[in-house]
Length: 118
Image (cartoon, rainbow, N blue to C red; front, side, top):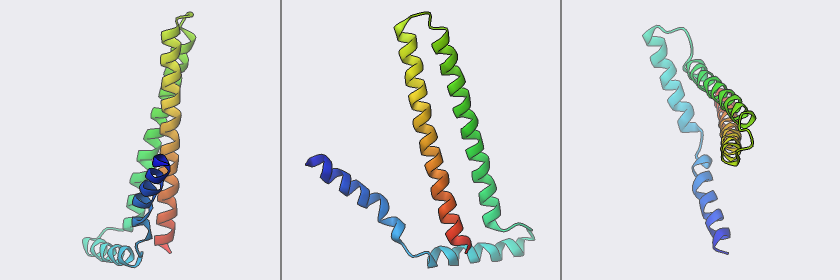
């Protein structure tokens, strides 16, 4: 019962800020666009932020790929040593969890920016 209440309370703490009106965010982006124009920059601020996020996610994907290759090599060269196999399994599990978190972050970012971009 305690775990159930904790899960509900944690979920409310996480998702309550998401219900905030997007009007304030849209106004802030409009003001940033005005500053962008006065500065003489060509791209919109959303494009710049999207480029940064895309680059960061690409880097994280590369790190995931490297971890999977490392864990695979570690597993193949374990020569029956159980501690090396367990270490490789732990690295693979951690890498998959990290990939899931990264993909979730991308999905949330894509959803929010598509709603703000209008």
